Length: 206
Length: 206
DNA sequence: TTCAAAGTGTTAATAAAATAACACTGTTTA
DNA sequence: TAAACAGTGTTATTTTATTAACACTTTGAA
Image 1 (cartoon, chains in turn red, yellow, blue, cyan):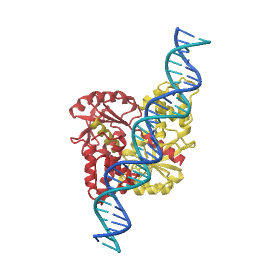
Image 2 (cartoon, rainbow over the protein chains, first blue to last red; image 1 turned 60 degrees about the horizontal axis):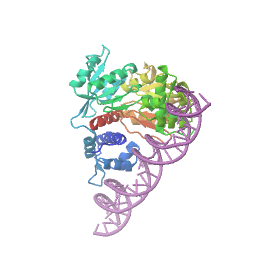
Image 3 (cartoon, rainbow over the protein chains, first blue to last red; image 1 turned 45 degrees about the horizontal axis):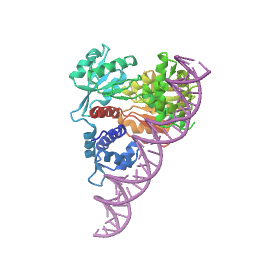
Image 4 (cartoon, rainbow over the protein chains, first blue to last red; image 1 turned 120 degrees about the horizontal axis):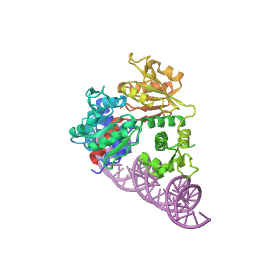
């Protein structure tokens, strides 16, 4: 399967999330236009995305929700699973960890790192917290490839570099600090302030 | 000024965030390619965005950082400021509040809402928490137009509806629940799981 | 059955976004 | 002070993403 565009991956993730909710609500079939409505996009977009991943419904009674969830899984999940570390287990790190933990079977948050002696060697939000000095060791030992970066700005850069040296292949950066990573490391940046400002702008402009 | 595309607004927010850091680091001028590098985009993109908002540097010695920060402010900020409420002050709500509070002079988080009697009528992360029943009243009284939705999924929909009835004009939805809002309300959805899954996908695929 | 109605997969067209190209203007150096 | 250089603003081009169009298939009703 050819590598999908980032936007498509985002939507696939959104489809699955909504399908899980839809299934939990007791629905077994869904039409493209219904799924589209949940994401505020068009039915064509949905069908086009599903075409891209080679999915087609046998019946014309809508898509089989379970089947579609599984198909999306075969595309965006890694078969053997992927391990995640939360770097910096302050307010945001804790929030993300407890929010995410257990939600996706193939993605496991297996470690947290922090410098605060109050936190180190304790289990926080269901995850063991290690001192930052042990990062390299633990990342290797636990085969962690993904890092969620939620540390104070001053440490963001050096700690991210260390994580990469230790073998991290993908970073989701929640800090306000711009990072630079080698080509073989995938970097996604998310800044809440930008989201808030965007809402504010469109509220202002109507 | 014509309404800008969402993507441009996001980048402008990113420019300002980076410029603030750049200024704090003691730099007063910045070239388009330097600013571009911080955001991992091209210099052309930067110049194009600035053209869109009608900014041009008098000198050819790079942009005046302070001036550019101000110009971006005149575009994306509301002159009289905008008030924000955090609806649901659990882990994530607290994290966002303490992260954001005071970072942008024109955007103020002025109230939190929650049902938990332990939280109600207390000041949490620097913001007073009110019971959800008082939401309509407070939103009106404090002229709150923006809501950050960080409540448990089961309450998301009814509470969002109530907030809109009370006069909210923009919602940033951090829950996994798909919302429907009237046309005059701006809705931005952010799902952390999607971000994490996106990173995971591109780590997997290389 | 058979005929509409509704839904799907796919190709074609459109729109939006990012990139390239380039003329112009200061800046620097010799 | 002139010639090379570097950086900017803007138009043109390309690429990417979205939407429209449509033939085909199933479903359901008459």
